[in-house]
Length: 138
Figure (cartoon, one colour):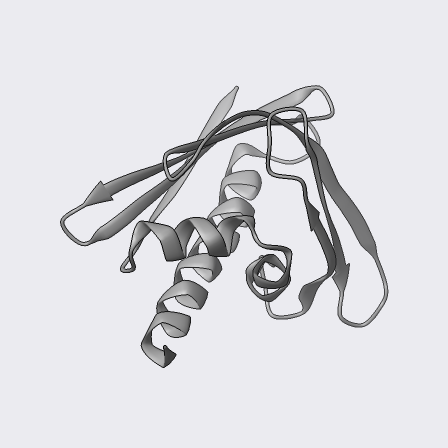
């Protein structure tokens, strides 16, 4: 089953792309809720390159590594990657109100579709807020 989440980011494509693919930025937005955070991130942004993020509960009670391999990169347009047996595609689509960021990913069987969609959507919404706030500062 494929699950889709998307958000609009009111910022230029170069800023959106950079925030999505830069480890220092990823560590600031990659969490589904305020009680989680990303403590480490690594990105080798090329086809065959690997990425990883260490995501942990702020109270230290649990954590996990989200990691995979990039399978296709089209700068400022598309990122495809595999993580375990699953795949995801991220599209960056310019529109009248900024950049539409759409993520389509393979669901898993442990959590409901609603839980998975809710978690990934929360992270994407966090991403949009981060990029827009960063833009107003610069």
